[in-house]
Image (tube, rainbow, N blue to C red; front, side):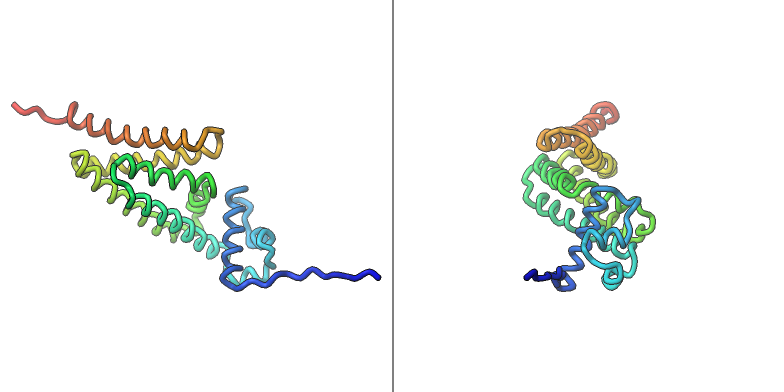
Length: 209
């Protein structure tokens, strides 16, 4: 006698289910970008009904805001740990760069893609807040250790912090070895500071007579 079996969905706690929804949204963004993202597509990925989706998040924008908050906070915490372990400037640059590139290798450009969505721009203040802290932190260290004016250290830092972002984009569209790309990125960042200092003290520093 044939026994009929019915497929039953596993029950999860609200916290676990919410995490699953966010993970599914992150996976879809990493794979396909933002253009076709919807509550329905995320629900299908997470195996959650559309009705239940709206019990967890009032709108797609709310879901994406929480996802951006989660991802930027996660990456920031890892970079803070790497920075605190550094004993030399190269270790500081390498540690924070390594965290960034490994994050991109595992998660893609999720944060950058979320930032491009103007409907969740209100949360970009958090992104800018973290970036300001990073710029202030690096600039202070550079000014003290490279004997550079603070305004020059800040400008150099703002520019050099854009290098890992470009490296992350390159990583996803190339076959370059991750460690090799990390080495190149670190060299370019250190070179930016070294040349800025050299330029300041050789070409633009006023002569003493």
